[in-house]
Amino acid sequence: MDHLELIKKPVKAEIAEFENHFKSKIDSNIPLLNIITNYIIRRKGKQIRPLLVFLSAKLVGDINKSTYSAATLIELLHSSTLLHDDVVDESYERRNHFSINAIWKSKVAVLVGDYFLSSGMHGGCD
Image (cartoon, rainbow, N blue to C red; front, side):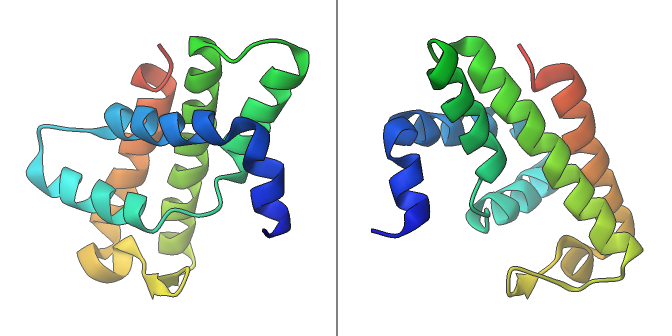
C-alpha cells in the first residue's frame, strides 16, 4: 500500500461517496458538456483537496452534508483553474492525456472552466 492510500484509509468510504456527489453537481442537460465533464472525471487526479477536507472534518467532528459541499466546492474551483491555466499556457496535455483545449479548443475549455466555477459558487454547495 502506498503512502497516499494509507492516508486515505480513514475516509475511504467518504471519498468514494464524494465522487458520486461531485459528479451529480456537474451533471447537465447539455450533451456536449456531459461528454467533456465525463472526460475530466475519468482522468481525475489524486483528489488531495477533498481528501484534506474529509480528514480535517473527521479530526474535529463528523463528516456531514456540509463536508461534501466544501469538498465539492474546492474541487470545482481547483478544476476550473486547471482548465483556465491550460488555455493561458496553451498546454495541450494534462496528466499524460490531451487537455480540454487540445480536443475542444480554447473557447470550450474556458466555458467549461466557467461552468465549474459557477457550479462551485452556486450549485456546488447545498
